[in-house]
Image (cartoon, rainbow, N blue to C red; front, side, top):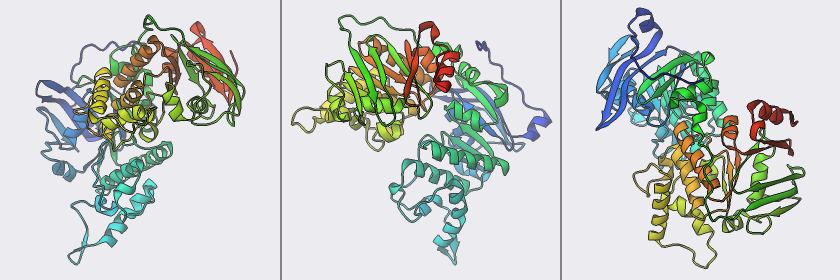
Length: 518
């Protein structure tokens, strides 16, 4: 369906019923940053004891709204009612005094201080006039146990993983016993196990009456955790609905202001002067795969689909030289066989964009300059062990410009970027070696809709430029919207291939779940 909302009229929320059932009621908020309108009459009601999601593209106003509620910035106009009382938060401390806590996507921990010290910054409990680490342990232990965070609380935070640091940040806010908990991409650094544990904690908090605002672009997770969702676009509310009353498709269409299909750019004309290249795989077998055979050519996007454990990731890992095949025949565009390792793959123009960019695709504590140069330096064939700093900077600036990576400086750390821009860095570092074979393992996982659209266009461009493209995704609309052919894997074997008119959601779902052609 096409979401036809073209006119926005602020809703009036003045009834006594709304004021009593809503913990937070925002009416017609406006916020300008110079000539940029961040909020343009935003309205929102958050019912008590619920998890209320807020979804929208980058620039839709989500973060500005959260910062206003957390007292970090102040609106230009509009009103906020909290617990039935009109309020204005002049500072983060004022918001905390009302019972509002926020967990930001960007961590605000002190790396060299201990976990305990980070949990009680500027509010250390005392006994007999001295800071009591025993009291700190006693107060934090139940929440740390709830979060499943079993770490040495006396060790520096710098020794923890990114996921563990995110949980420390959440624990610090929960220690303040907030009435409204704002979560801005709280699981962006967490793996599936940690995310499942976090969601179990959030559901427990909801049962204890804590109200939550949950900001995320991972819509599948929004639908699994939230009670209601507000979609915003261009600084305004598009609609608010119960999760049971809407769908992911409707949310996406509300976010972009059009059909979901419009996210996917049409095929681009093939660039002249590029000879056809092929990747040929015959009889590939490994510990997880059985007798896989296919060809992929330039000028097409070949999809790889299958349930988790079907062998899709194993296949991409073998093609990139990360693991070995037991048998099989392989012909790459350069005429050679399968790479023996990732370094050889990079030198031969074979790239892999991994599904987990934060753990496998980026050096989060390094700059964009270092990240974008990583592959080019590692793939050097000469005895030269480094490139000149001006060469590294030129590479970074080239990719920042070409891929429209939003950053204030090439020397900013990768962990300071949004998920979509981080993914562009992962792709950009491979473009520096001009690959002939592009392996994409769920390349839009965890990025917002706007960044997805840009990555889809980039994938189209890679194909049009004469590269062999294999594209794996866990989202069926992506496979249907981008791929010319889709290879379906089922329990380690190739179940079949869908092409052209046969690529439908029904056919794809049937093959993925049964391993049989319809």
